Image (cartoon, rainbow, N blue to C red):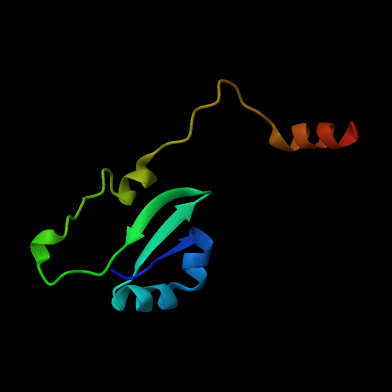
Length: 88
């Protein structure tokens, strides 16, 4: 087995082609998010049965349906901003 490379999310984004080339050559890449391992990039096998596809829990289209909270009373945001600036 070849050596395992490690990177953080920003490094992966910046050098994705390089890491994918390493994976294509049989290496494994471990991805960290703030020192916590979150993903492992490994070469794909020829056998499609080895792949495990996990469906999204909630499609992003549902996010558009979320309504903002209702305010209990009308608020004049401009007045609040002016008062805040006057207090400086």
